[in-house]
Length: 340
Image 1 (cartoon, one colour):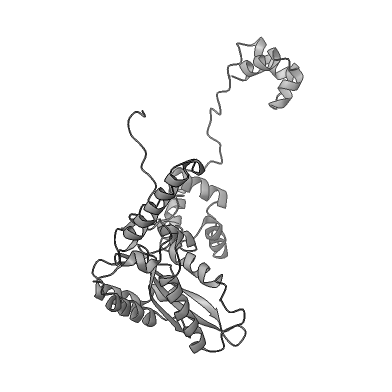
Image 2 (cartoon, one colour):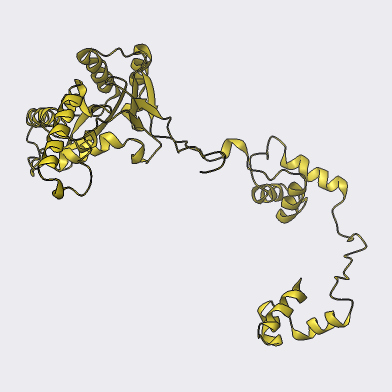
């Protein structure tokens, strides 16, 4: 194969010495190969066993030591010095590794494998009260380095904020009470409701998990440090903190923070035209009034196009109501069969 590559290089214009140097051979070695039988490897390897090779008994002894209860959880680099401290020498570290490799004992041990995190399950909301998501964000307090904690629960179908609470600490018990109260306030049957959150302490606290289990709520969690697994609530926190009315100075008290959050929730649910749901308010979509609103817009645009058709290069704007909403959509399955 090497000779064929060299021939190809020289035919392309390369010098023989340069081509040989590029693959780490001397031109003299190549000439010797060509003068022989075409470059076949004549090496047959060692015909005798080295005198200092480990015997079968010694190899078995190494395996026995490495798999013993005392040493099975440590590496040969730990085993050999510990034996040496007892005045025992069996073999070098490299010999231990070589013997264990031949015995198939250098595989990664199961308990020490790093954790693997899989993408959360896909959940589809076709109506309000099916899939909720929640999280906690910081609101600056009156003293530098102190914060109030805003708990927020969002219905992903309508983007309506269904519950909020401002508190002085992060607590699984507080979160559990908020979710239970939200179910009662919204008239939602918690059995089968999906509640998605990240991996924070309040989200996975024993009180929170026990409450969800008692209510029959399906708990879903993001992967650690993957904000894209919880996109809807992350987006609303950005809207909240980039709102023109968001205070530039820290909140003076928890009452002030609560009042501001209540005002934001009213604006967001009843006045804010949300781009992801065809610019209707979350409350309009939550109550099922968005088809009528969007139908009226569609009729208005059609009428405007009829009055001045030359101003419209394409069809009117899409005012079709948004259908189902998917949380953490799975990758599209590969198309099987011929493509047409």
